[in-house]
Image (cartoon, rainbow, N blue to C red; front, side, top):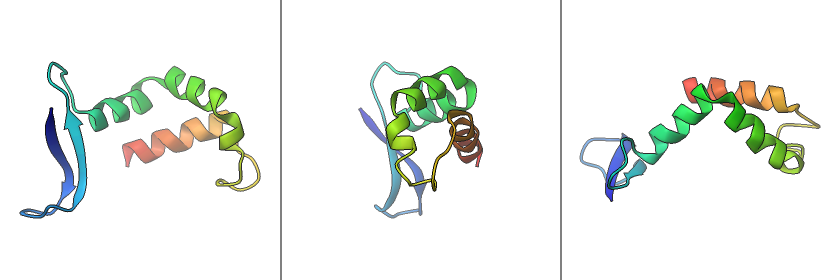
Length: 78
């Protein structure tokens, strides 16, 4: 396992890091972003499974699964 800096100031130990597991092509953050951007079925399945959490109030009253997918993909692009 290797620790990979994502958003870290030079010579700092604070920031956002990911892990890169031995034998894997990408670190875990990159894999996650790729799933969000390239696999809408992954997000649909996730938000369907966690629909109660999705509508718990964090996004206001309610948010549709499609709205959550769109929001997540925009955030991943950003």
